[in-house]
Image (tube, rainbow, N blue to C red; front, side, top):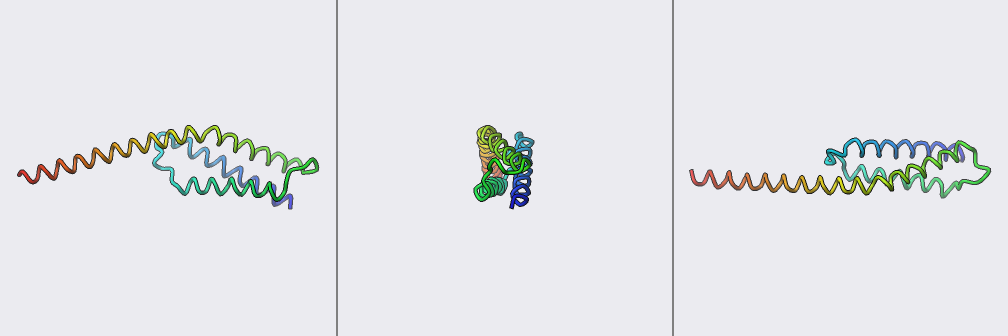
Length: 118
């Protein structure tokens, strides 16, 4: 069971690091982030939590598993610190998109009214 725990935690840690990198690298263009990205992130977090719930870390747990569990905790702490900034960026992107949509709608209305007067 310890090998499964180690494999699961390593996979979860890799996925969490990858997700944080993708979210950080796209901060200037948050429109590439989808709800599925967050669903996948949540799934990975829950997978790690379930793994540790089923196989708690004790003093006799092998060092590699303990290190993977510490890495998991560290990744969760990085996420905790990073998510408010990402949330702010997503809200800014939403506002930008809404403004762009309003501009397109106004331009389309102007174009329609211009064709009626011709």
